[in-house]
Amino acid sequence: MNTFRHSFRHEWTAFVGFFERQINLYKRYWLWEVVWLVYNVVSVLSIGYLASGLGTAHTAQARASLERTQLYLLVGAVLWGYLSLVFFEIASAVTWERWEGTIEYTFMAPIRRVTHLFGVCSFGVVYGLVRTVVVLIVVTFAFHLNLAHANLAGAGAVILVSTLPLIGLGILSAILPLLSPEKGEQMTVAIQGVLLLVSGVYYPISVLPRVLQGVGMLSPLTGTLSGMRDALLNGASVSALGTTLWHLLLMGIVLIVLGIALFQRAEQRAKRLGLLKRNG
Image 1 (cartoon, rainbow, N blue to C red):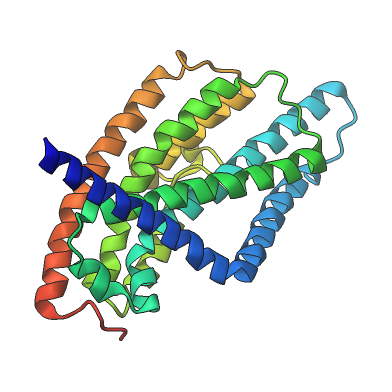
Image 2 (cartoon, rainbow, N blue to C red):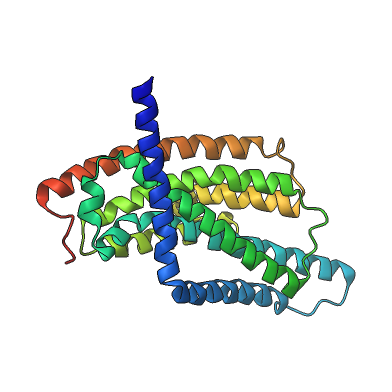
């Protein structure tokens, strides 16, 4: 029992340490984070104004349709900002280590790799939520959004559960810089682009070719966006979203377990081939 407590305390301290380290890294580069936050806000606002400029509505029915289209696009833009940020933060776990020159110390430290990855993941989720709240406040004031029919509990449940498959995807993508120090980071950006294309961020996936529709159905972001829109646009409750939530939960468990297993194998390969410290 004492051994378990000591081991748990050791891993918890390491978990908190990785979380705090990420905070300190962002404190050091806080001006750049302000730049990216402004970019995020401007990107979402541009989508909202795009919807506003689709046409001039003269009837109440036309105005309602335009408002719904605007909300559809804004939900996609805001949620994509959150999802892509969390994905990129987790996927960049190895890149951060290599950039800061701490990769050998971290990967040789007597801690479980799960502790390291979850410490980074937890910071990415919290930071993503904080930035998303800021963007939502700006968007709400800019467009006077009407969320009277939205089910916020359903939307919150979708965000909570969708974080799990997002973490799994991020861990899988974090393997790429271990496999290829030269091009691995660029591949994570390519994966992000594919997710944007097939996940229905700005359009229903039904407009895509059948092959891309099939890929889109495999993306957890597709279910997340669909569930979020059902909750915010149609007022879907938590129980009504049950199928989507269970699907995301199952996908999250599979992706996290697979991601951790493959990451550990990639780590062993990188150590064997001396790829940890290489920068190109």
